[in-house]
Length: 131
Image (cartoon, rainbow, N blue to C red; front, side, top):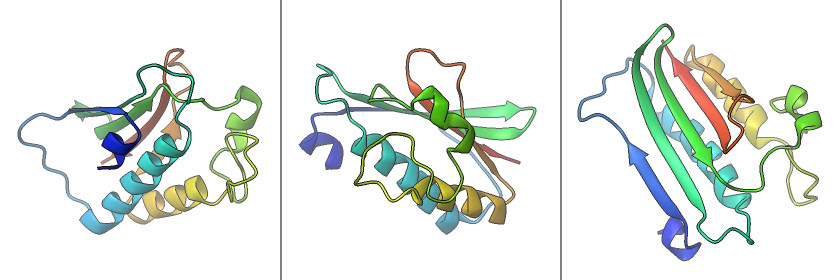
């Protein structure tokens, strides 16, 4: 519904059967926070806003969930502190700087790692790595 209201193309690539041993409630909250971030940072000048969710199985780190978007992106100088309390990925005064901090705390609770993939030069790219 949110994607439709924002004229966002939501692309989900998940293999039919994905099993992961984790707390589903915490994982849902992590996904919700990162997706909320993607929607908050939609580039209004973008003709075709896109948010992609991709699941990668059988990696060295177990399962990876990639959340990518073509929004406004993260300013490079802000990346090192992105998951710290009150840190913001943009200069938007509306942001509290707690969302990604909370994501990191929740990920630690379930033994996961969340990080920003700076190597993706086309899209804003967050990864949730689950064991």
